[in-house]
Image (tube, rainbow, N blue to C red; front, side, top):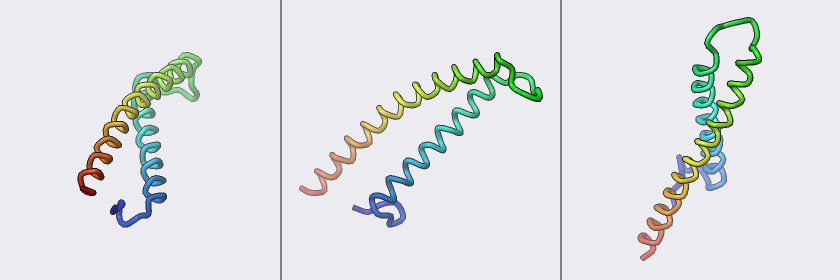
Length: 87
């Protein structure tokens, strides 16, 4: 099986996990910042902190459940492709 840019399987998995974490962090930062920070002040207010914490929790729950469904479909597709190519 050919991996991303001829990486071995372990390097490819590490690359995918790192990319996923960066993608999740970027999305979380953009979504929660836009929602919770309405005025720029020298420091975060208690209201900002509560909003950010709640937003982060909701974002992570949504991301995790969505990612799990996508991951399951990808794995299923890969298994089917491997079975087809081995026949």
